[in-house]
Length: 124
Image (cartoon, rainbow, N blue to C red):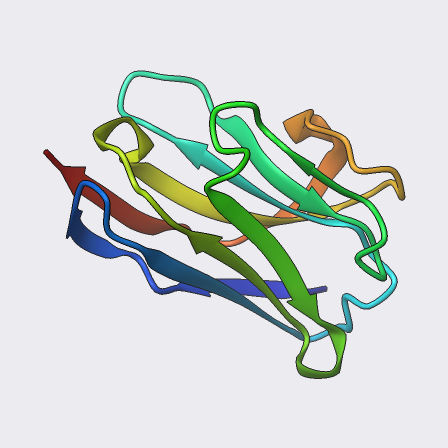
């Protein structure tokens, strides 16, 4: 059983940056594809970014491409999400998740372990 704990969220102004971290415990994640999702009030959970086991394959949602960067440090069992040029529409709870499959897939049902989330609020 793996536990995922996100941190790094906060309240910022539009144009600012934040770096989210997701630390895994209980089991190594080095052999797993990992992803970041977000959920805004009244909306469905949506894919933000995903990274394969070694980082060789990365996918981004079109809404964040060019602004967000996903990375991982398998030695530290940690996944990161660097968020630059934040916009008010990026406001959401951000979740880290472990995939049950190797390809980087945007579907939430492909992920079997989730963190509790970290709130990101961007004001204009």
